[in-house]
Length: 107
Image (cartoon, rainbow, N blue to C red; front, side):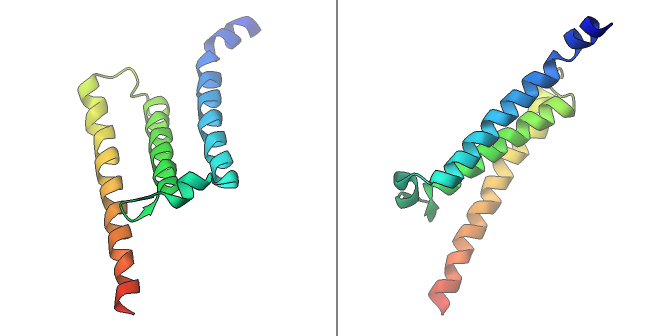
C-alpha cells in the first residue's frame, strides 16, 4: 500500500522541487541584488524588478497549470487562460511604473 501511494504522489514532489528552485532563485536575487541588475534600467525600472516579475509570472502559470489541472487540457484552452496573465499583468505594471514617474515630475 505504501509503495502504491509513493508511486502516485511523484508529481507533487516534482511540483514542490520546481517551485522551491524558482522561489530560491527569487530569494537569492533579493538578498544579493547583483550590481548589474540594480544599475541597468529597462522601461523606467531596474532590471532586477523585471526578473522578479517574470519569475513570478512563470511560477503563477505553473501553479495554475498544475493545481487547476490544466496541464492535460487542449493547448488552446491553456492559452486562453494563461495568455491574459502574460499580457495584461506586464501591461498593468508598465502603466503603474510610467504613471508613477509623473508624481516626481509634477512636484
